Image 1 (tube, rainbow, N blue to C red):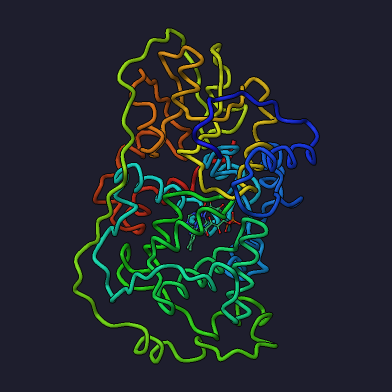
Image 2 (cartoon, helix red, strand yellow; image 1 turned 180 degrees about the vertical axis):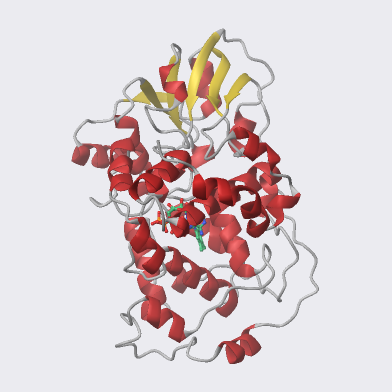
Length: 415
Ligand SMILES: Cc1cc2nc3c(=O)[nH]c(=O)nc-3n(C[C@H](O)[C@H](O)[C@H](O)COP(=O)(O)OP(=O)(O)OC[C@H]3O[C@@H](n4cnc5c(N)ncnc54)[C@H](O)[C@@H]3O)c2cc1C
């Protein structure tokens, strides 16, 4: 994505192959493979996946790489579906026995609330590290799937090719990088977020911190037995590498971890300077990347509607992620699609007032500082009264948050 050119509007080709090609030629600096057939973007595909969920099987086998996971995350991340819809659909498919899936949906809501409450602080250590972290750069062999470990190299290749990884594979890969290879969790997190179709600052950064031990009481690590069991032995079977995971938890813990008394590490985020004055007079509805559905409340508004591919927001995202967004936008014909800096686009449209959906994304909010912005509440996963009961203290740990909302999510009636 270029930063210097004036903003311009684009028309996305209706034909999918042409659209993929169009996006590739438009965003030449974005690396990565084309979006695969398996991941069409948009609400229609999200709804199809909702209908195919298997909540009971999920409860039994979700930790296995071949388990019945939903693959809903990119659709939830981009607002093609709301969490409330996913919870309702789950209850419709299984009036009982769906607790595990509902519990996992709640994790997404939990991380998001932590983001709302802490803003840019989620990019720094949330708590002191519980074990000494080496915090090194991400080496090339890790990024290029050339570690010589068939399991880890497979995860990296899958991520780069498809933009998706099973949760257990994300945990193993993050743990390998942080605890075996000494990678700074922030370097690992930003690399992974660039490649993921569901890349999300809260779910991603806070999961990496949970693995590292800066948002949890201990580090997450695993051994060969665990990896082999949940991957159906597919990597270990023919593996010739010297396995760094082949030991008991006690022995690995002794080898990997030293206690730490290092203080919390805070990193400064560069701030964007707001524009001094706004001369426009129109109201513009701005669709950002968390609200890509024609069912979004903003879509019914009578004002001009725009989405902007903005280098300040998506500079480093892999090509397949931008193509996924293009698929989503094809289902939203009322929305004009632009490329450029958001503020330049809004200026060229003569905007003075902006309507958009609320977000914990302070980078986006920073870009809109010079405008009068009406932030509409995002769809809630459960009723507002309950949401208002959650305090900052309840967000210290998922278990505290779950104690407030869990029973309501589990019993939420399907209509
Ligand atoms: C290191 C690491 C990085 C991660 N980065 C992201 C990210 O950038 N974006 C993202 O959406 N998720 C992230 N997750 C969480 C989780 O791995 C994915 O949400 C999940 O694997 C997506 O696949 P699925 O839709 O098939 O999930 P399922 O297992 O089918 O779960 C259903 C839905 O529940 C939610 N969910 C499930 N597990 C989690 C979890 N642990 N945390 C938060 N939400 C969860 C997701 O919205 C998911 O779509 C990360 C986890 C780890 C360990």
